[in-house]
Structures are given as C-alpha cells and as structure tokens.
Amino acid sequence: MLENKSNGLTPLSVLGEFGLINRLTRNFNSPDSNIIIGPGDDSAVWHKNEKEYNLISTDVLAEGIHFDLSYCPLKHLGYKAVAVNVSDICAMNGKAWGILVSIGLSNRFSVEAIEELYAGVHSACQKFGLVLLGGDTSSSNQGLFISVSVLGSVDKNRIALRSGAKVNDLICVSGDLGAAFAGLQMLEREKKVFLDNPNVQPDLSGYEYVVERQLKPEPRVDIIDSFEKDDIIPTSMIDLSDGLSGDLLHICEMSNCGAVVYQNKLPVDHETGKVAEQFSSTGETYALSGGEDYELLFTVPLTQFSKVKDKIGIKVIGHILSAAEGVQLETDKGERIDLKANSWAHFS
Ligand code: ADP
Ligand code: MG
Image 1 (tube, rainbow, N blue to C red):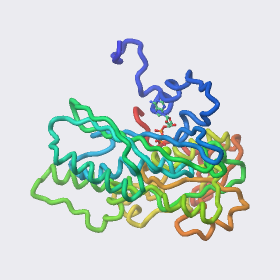
Image 2 (image 1 turned 90 degrees about the vertical axis):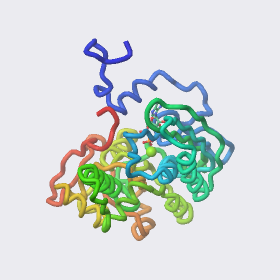
Image 3 (image 1 turned 60 degrees about the vertical axis):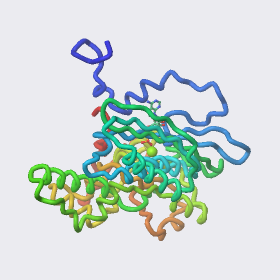
C-alpha cells in the first residue's frame, strides 16, 4: 500500500519535488486573514503588527542527499543548516531572529561529534544574531538528519515575494553562480581518488573558493542591509538554492511572466569555470543548473537601474518579458533558447 511496486500507485518521480508539494498542499486553503502567504514562497508570512509581518521557514538536510560526512565536517554542517534557513528569510527581504533545531541521530555518532555539529550551529547563531528557541532530538536507524526552522520579520512596505515581477523589470543576481556545485564536483572527485587509493591524500589546492562555497554557504544578509540603506525594494526575490534556471522559473511562474537572461552576463568565478572545463562543461552551465549558491535572484523596476548598476556584487543579467514570450536564455551567439528547469529537484 505504501510502496510503489508496479501496483498502479504513482511513483514520486512522476510528480517530482514541486509537483508533489503542489499536490499535497492544494486542499489547504487558509481561512485566516492574518496569513498573507502559505506554502509556495521562500517563507510563510503572517501579520505581526501595524508595521511588520512575521516570517517562518524550514529546511531539512539529510545525510547522503544533502551532505556526505566523508568530506563535510560536522561543524560546517551545523553552520550550513542554519545559513540556508537564514537565506530563505533574506529572500523575503526580511531579517531572521530565532531558530529551532531538530536532529535525528544514529548510534554511530558520539556526544563529541554532535557537540561539533552544534559548534557550527552556535557559530551561525552568533554571526547572524539568532536566538536558539528549541528543537527536537530523535534516534534514527540510518544516517543523520538536521532540520532547522527559522523565524524572522520584515517591514510591510519592504517585503519581496516571488510573485511581484513585472514586464520590463530588470533581473539581478548577487555574487557569482555555480561555485557551490563546482566545489561539490571537486570534493566528489577527491573522495573517489581516495577510495580508489587511500595512500593518495585529497588535493584541493587551487580550489579553495569553490570548496568553501559548497561547505560553508553564506546567506546574503549584507545585500538585504544594503537594500535598506540604498532604499531598493525588489519587486520579486528568491534565494538560489536549486540553480538559476529552476529558481528563475519559480519567479516567472508565480509572477505570471516570462524572462530573458543573457549567457554572457552570468557571473561565474574563474575557479568555477576551471572546474567546469575539467568536467567537460562550462561555467555558465554550472551557473544555470548548479544548486546551493544561496545568492539572491531578484527583480527591480527599470527606474532603479541607476541604484543597482554600480553596486558591488550585483549584476543585471536580463529582464522580465510577458508570459507569452516564455523564459529564455540568449546565448553568446544571439540565439534564444527556452530555459528548462534542469536544476536540482528531489525525486527527478
Ligand atoms: P526553498 O527552496 O526556498 O527552501 P522549497 O522548494 O523547499 O523552498 O519549498 C517551496 C515551498 O513549498 C515553500 O513555501 C515550502 O514551505 C513549501 N513546502 C515544501 N515542502 C512542503 C511540505 N512537505 N508540506 C507543505 N509545504 C511544503
Ligand atoms: Mg528559498
């Protein structure tokens, strides 16, 4: 009954991650007018007071899916579990203030190992000014799970939803893209070399940047602060957890619009390009399809061009089109091709 064994039941892969979420959540209409946004954006949103909304979001990291303890130090994992949640609050143009942390542990872990995980959680709490509110602890038959929920708030006039992009808005991105995936490729390759021959020590020199981007992602709290300082309010925003193509498609779907992004405008670090080449790919492909960069993808009205154009670390990569025009990539040769959601999704 519960498992799919050619018995007429639908395999998870038929719906994929986002189809499954839609199917599971479609019958939960909120009767409560205090709830502004339920499932579907980076955080849920509800009324706080005259000036602010409350924000809440949650993310689970599962061993073997999101991390591999043979190269991911537990302290980094604890930090990352918090950082990726803070990123979802940033994606609403909000500020995080508290977290709940739940862990599932198999008996292969020692107390000291879990203290190491929590040293990372602690370090993230200090860095992002978060209060630890509580959590839950369970045994697990296999592997480690860490699930963090984050609470935050946002000024009502400054909130950025996935659904606010308008035709002609500029599409902007912070930082550079594809680096976290490049780091993962390097770590996986060195792991394989080590397993094939344990006498050969992993050599990641020259790839420190991309490895750090994979193991210790940084939510762009600094960008949210600078939006406030420069009085920039994005019309829409999402954090890049699944790769530019898939995440831009989320904005376009929710905003009922199309988009064009220019291949030659995609920000790619030279280390990312170097790794991509070694894997017979390109930096731009990593930027479009690689996940876990935790940069911010957002749109602003054309009138704000002068405010964003010289901002360090922000790049204009395209603009919003009508829904009928589709979501496209303009290649270096000037050809336009449909952008596919070939980025990370569970069950696909
Ligand atoms: P993100 O990548 O920003 O963390 P997700 O892609 O994980 O967002 O989730 C997209 C939306 O679907 C979010 O609003 C999230 O709260 C909601 N969601 C995800 N999984 C579930 C679930 N199992 N039940 C209800 N809502 C879910
Ligand atoms: Mg998100």
